[in-house]
Length: 590
Image (cartoon, rainbow, N blue to C red):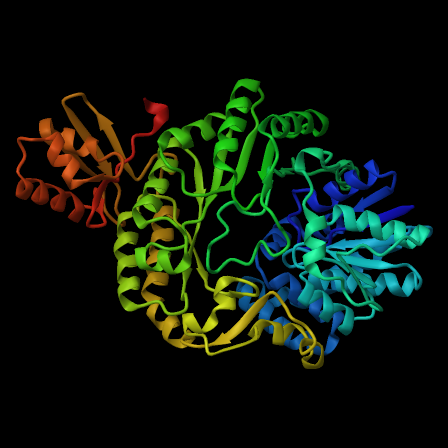
């Protein structure tokens, strides 16, 4: 029994596929030989790593290139989408598509798939059309070789459509792939029963309720991902970079309430590994592959267990560095523990800077907590990446105005990225569309450019289009888009980017705040005595009631006037209930 597993473009080229690494390690444990192939390395080398990185950062551009190859009649429409996504490469579409086709063909010609029990494609973001294209080439060269699709994009609804619309995939796995893939290989090689999470072209899919009960692996029993195949392929192209290794702490999302999210359709039952197990995996991988940068694939790290993990990494001695998605941290001490253990870059689910909008999104956080997270990350030298979801259905003018006020306060911090709302299949918004003013759900307009109409009608894709208040939302949010562009320009044009744009230095009886503003020389503010004490007391969000209780000689109207003046200068943020001093005192200076 032998399997070949493939990860197509547009996976991130400087990371091995954790899907392939995890599956091959599991199959090896079951006595099944597996070879992992990463043709995205060949494509990246052929078109250039800069171009590849730019294309892989787009949700649609890479799919447009493979659409033109898979459906030549769609080439003009696919090019239109590509140019819209990456205007700077307007003249490159035909050349890139030709290079991708030649590279994929040449890559496949070097493979010997004779004697394989099956070929499996892991399909995540922006890999569907690439996988279909490669599967079509494999079918021509190896007509009898079974082909299976799986991965986070392979929901049951999409699976039915794929098997109906395309002749190349024979099977599709939904949910966690370890057990069903091993079972499918035994089914093909030995005639055992078809596993419950496997859809076949000639069979009715087994009830997902049954499949889900089979799905919940104890993560501590899983072998570490095997990335040896990736590094062997990387050596062939000359290894022009040091890879970042994906690592898995948990499956699913412990919060799992966000109304816009459809990421967890494939996970059933939130689980995580023991911190000791994760730290042991990291250290073993670092030594085996001689890499020190790691990327957590989790939707959100489990807070208590993550705390223990980073404590262990801090004491280990190796200079490992991590990226992770986390929920808004509770306080500075929590984030400080993460930083000591090597967490240098975080994706925080900011999503909105309006409290009522955060409620609609079911984020479970406030604007004050979001801004405090941005401040804490800046103070600790952690790169915070986050999105601001624009055009959320049913957003109001007052929510846009609240967002604009908050954007003025966060000017000193690293800019967030604007992300237009998209309707994800299976998300709470999708399931309760009417409650959000959505009148009809349709195919996404971009999918109409990628797929011929007869094919698209048979597919139930993960990103939907809809009819509702989209035009109104687009107009409402234009000022926010403009403000974010100004925010980004301000930070792009700053001279010494390692220095906070709003920095506090404490002189014991006074503080000096240095403030950078767009198009102006740096300002300096000096606060002495009681003014200093009050400002420092606002280092974390604090209510006016607590401030008055602490500073008993200060009258309420005096406090109101003082804080209002600091707010007008951009030194303090208030949500009407609490106050937060915005100036940062970098921890490395303390």
